[in-house]
Image (tube, rainbow over all chains, first blue to last red; front, side, top):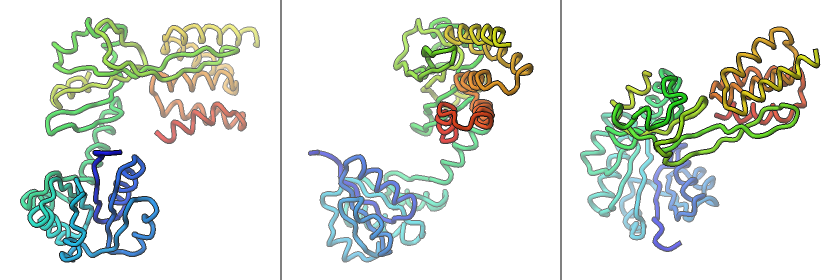
Length: 231
Length: 85
């Protein structure tokens, strides 16, 4: 357990609550803070510390000190509170890593200015995610690794089927990497009843042949990935 | 009919084991036109669609299986997994 990061989550709406309980489930020490007593009651037996506190109460915040806290996550919808608190945590308490949820781009820009290290646009991000997966039904999942890099899970495009990774020459032609293949492997059944199990081939060799039903996990620049999605 | 169905299922099983899913789907779809209420054929078609990641179609056929055989545990399991995707 030593050297494990300690987290504080301020604001226990559905986003803050989920982040706090998930971290706690994974065995991390979590301090959960909200001004609403009911919310504190709900979470009190799910995290290490649950504290009822107004996030603008600087004196109490100073008392808590956050000396052992490595990462603070601010999940407050109310604009002024979220901004004032962010600035206080960065400037006064010198918290190394502050992550804040922004309602929109404007909110995010201000948070950036007061020194927030990472800004989460939950609504925009999930909307973009949904739109991409709806427009391109062959995409099962997208993870944005950086503003330029994505990790996508995509149905193996028709022109790839039956060919090896080497034959497709995927690196040269598309400048992307297949980092895993999810494959449905038929298993034996009685009376010709069909069944399969999903296997994952991590770092597939260049000799690996892509077959029907494969899902490719690809890493690459967004613009290069788009070319594959259009195949 | 039983004899013919057996042959079809055997062929489908063969193609499935060799991961020639589209071929297997083609054979099954043709057979289902003649026997639209056959649970074995419908179930296998659902599994095939799931194997090639055509989840909407797979869901529809698992539902059809359950309409005809509401205690089909395998179909229930697969359908639940697909709904939670």
